[in-house]
Length: 124
Image (cartoon, rainbow, N blue to C red; front, side):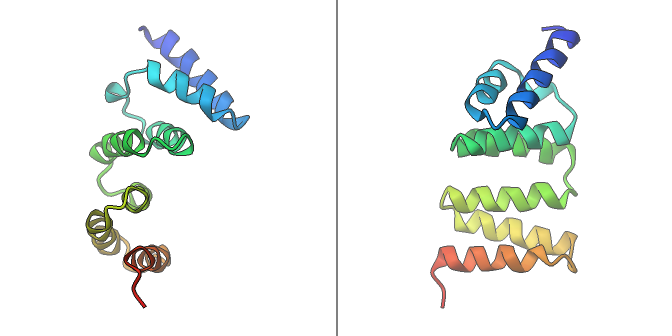
């Protein structure tokens, strides 16, 4: 697939996403090879598409690709923690939480994330 065809497909996928047609956006996302993409914002968007379609494992794989390209991104780490909770992997979510706090000790989202983890653990 050449660059122009890839660009057209991604634009079409983003149009479907803006229309909230997540099934059609996922169909296009399945056709493309995301390992070559360097744009972390686009990778995060593709991850959201899979998440909306409740394909959490694919969403997680795409987020790990984004994490490899931007390991210091709080947004990516936060979303990885949320996906870990959706998959029932509390230990992984805790690891992401610790990394998130280390990167952004003053970010108030750490409290939301901690609450969600404790809720998943059914802590008092």
